[in-house]
Amino acid sequence: MPSTTTPGNDFALAIHGGAGTILRSKMTPEREAAYHTGLRRALDAGRVVLADNGSALDAATAAVMALEDEPLFNAGRGAVYTSAGKQEMDAAVMDGRDRSAGAIAGICGPRNPILAARAVMEHSGHVLLIGESALEFCRQQGLAFEEATYFFTEQRWQALQETLAMRQSGAVDQDESRKHGTVGAVARDRHGNLAAATSTGGMTAKAPGRVGDSPMIGAGTWADNETCAVSATGHGEIFIRYAAAHEIASRMRYAGQTLDQASRAVVIDMLAPAGGSGGIIAVDRAGNVSLPFNCSGMYRGIVRQDGRLLTGIYDEPLVDFHKA
Image 1 (tube, helix red, strand yellow):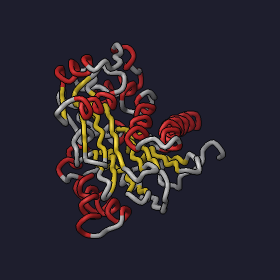
Image 2 (tube, rainbow, N blue to C red; image 1 turned 90 degrees about the horizontal axis):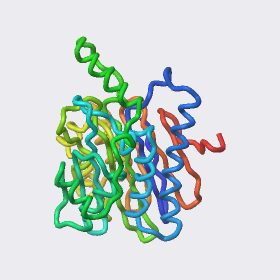
Image 3 (tube, rainbow, N blue to C red; image 1 turned 120 degrees about the vertical axis):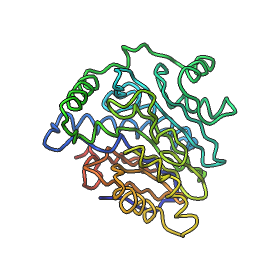
């Protein structure tokens, strides 16, 4: 599957809206355009920050917030449902300057879960908070909350009903988009700093209380100025077991691999054989970007200092959809 690696001495931002895309046979031109539009909106949100000499952390946060606000993606407003018909969201941020990190898991209420994760990083002495205690912390921090109706989407609710029905009948669910939707962003700012942010609703019909790789530092989220920033999307249990994001950084640090070599080795050669369907986005300290995936597709995009918003869905080069 494709990856993109290009040198850069200025800022770079990459995003993903989840791996395991809608099958081409089921994708309408209107829906495809909507996905590209959502990705472009998120890219532009991060680009504005970086172009104004903002930090990688602020840019990654802004990009993920835009994806959380878009119901098409499985995070925030578009989060999927557990088998009990509830929404439980996870998110994490990491600052490559000093490896500061914050994460939340199993919450529903804060409009933007990524802001909850960042609040944990900046206003607590902890890295990960979960459940009701995390919600109380978010209230104390004054984060914006929404009612359950804000997070409801008919598409996600129907996906839950279909998945539960298939389980009852013994059918195997082949829809990758129901298994590992996530959103994320990685950035390098003009000062050479790196950051990563990841947010998800998890897997459709997951067991209540299940937590995937997204809020797990080193599995689904990682950032260190000496190597790279990574945000993952895929079969979370496998990504956790293989410490996927940290493995990429380790290969760069100890084996001298390039970002693209390390990313592809982990996604294609390590995770895929183990059943870890999915992909990652990564940026290194030189501004190189890599976007490998081992499944049918990955909603993804890149923007650099030239301002071109390049997006893609399937196994094909990224395009400036606005001009396509």
